[in-house]
Image (cartoon, rainbow, N blue to C red; front, side, top):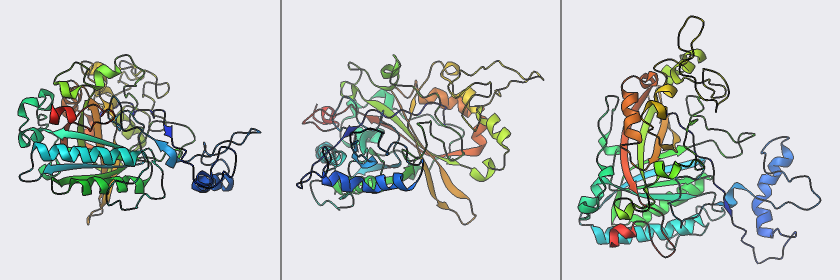
Length: 429
């Protein structure tokens, strides 16, 4: 799990759909008032809670809002779900094309999926057979992202269009991969800040697949809900560590170069796209929790309380790799996770991490099946994920407390323009 910054939320679009009833307040419809009453009640009943919902002290009435109104846009230069802020709920699912299904069926499927994604992300019901699960909810920052696996191209007769960057990942000594929960012809990532909205999208995508494709594997994840902390902060993982302190930021001049395929890149249909590495990483929490906090911090190389490097400062203070203690020992151990994953220790290799935590129950032995649905984005996995994972494979102190159980690599094309569907340049080019 490379130690890199989680992405910050981008500016959200806010839907303001007015009802047929007359406004209850200037600028606030009855529908919006009813839709946000629960959030407002929470503020009134809990001192200091739910920061962001309380109206600012002003003579003018502040517009009411809620998590449900936040909207990400389907159409754009890049697909949604890459640079958007982490959502509270997530699903990742891989499909295999059905026997006899080829390029024509795949194109029809991506057309259906794209229309469904566009509608659901706008807070609208799906076009056919909507389940009504999300009838009372707004968009809730829903994002739906589509990708193609290595096997997709042979199944559709598009081998000549398969990117070299999609070549299978090398084997790592720490891998314990379940092939039935790895790879796939097609991949879909779903994220939302409401569990029902996320499930509604998952069900709609599955139903849209029809006879063209079947589910190969599916995984569920979660993150801390927006507003659960008093101020924006880097997320924590299930080990209790602040996780993502060195993520590339969109404000950096080389961000697009590291994360997205250039406009004139190869192949042409991947322009403005990215490559997603998806790994189910089991955390051996019983073993981890037996360690003292000091021992845990030495494994990671950062303080558990605030994410600051053991060399001192705050979370964002540059790590001093040469600093030693009174006995001459390195303050940040040589095999600390945060030291090994630094771009300057890996030839500048960097990736944008956008994971979800998972918990799939407790086994008969009492051990939790929990960990990280690791999802990272880069312009080329051979210059992003692979060199970092190779370095980790050779001596990461964290490796004895985690297990890589499934893996996938997917080509995620650029965003669809108005009137287009995702992957159209590939399937109709």
